Image 1 (cartoon, helix red, strand yellow):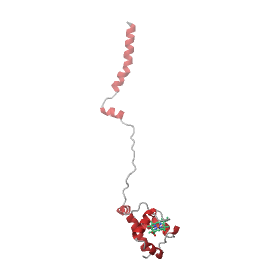
Image 2 (cartoon, protein in one colour):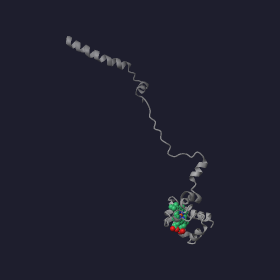
Image 3 (cartoon, helix red, strand yellow):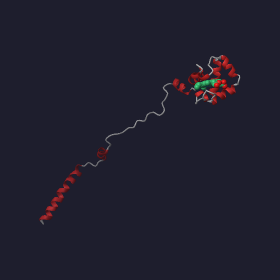
Image 4 (cartoon, helix red, strand yellow):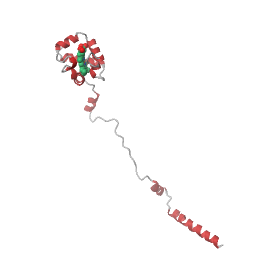
Length: 145
Ligand code: HEC
C-alpha cells in the first residue's frame, strides 16, 4: 500500500510542473502570435533593371541613331584622316574623284564587304547599309565633291 501511495505521489508531483506551466501558458491568439512571430525580416533589394532617363533630353539622346558625321568620326576617321594603309585621305579631292567614278553602288559594296586593306563595313559592325551609304556621301561631300 505504501509503495502504491508513494508512486501516486511521485506521479502527481511530476505532473504538477506541467499543470502549472499550462496554467501560465497563455493560449490566446495574440500571445501565440507574439511567441511565434519572426525575429527579423530579410529584404532583397533588386537593382533597377531599366534605368529611367532623368530628362527627356537624355531620352532623346539615347534614341537618336548616330549620324553619318558621327559614324565617320568614330569608325572611319582612324584610317581616312591620315591615310593609313593607303586609305584615301578625306581632303584628297582628286583621289575621291577617281573613286567616285566607279559609281556609288561599287563604293558601297567595297565598304560593306571590305576592300583590300579596308575591313568590312569600315569596322562599323552595327552600321546598316543605309548608314554606310550616308557616311560615304558625307565623306565625298567633305572631300569637296
Ligand atoms: C582600317 C582602316 C580603314 C577604316 C577603319 C575605314 N577604311 Fe575606308 N578605306 C581604307 C583603305 C586602305 C582604303 C583603300 C582601299 C584600296 O583602294 O585599296 C579605303 C577605301 C575606302 C573607300 C573607297 C573604296 C573604293 O572603291 O575606292 C570608301 C568609300 C571608304 N573607304 C569608306 C569608308 C567608310 C565609310 C568607313 C567607315 C565606316 C571606312 N572607310 C573605314 C581603310 C579604312
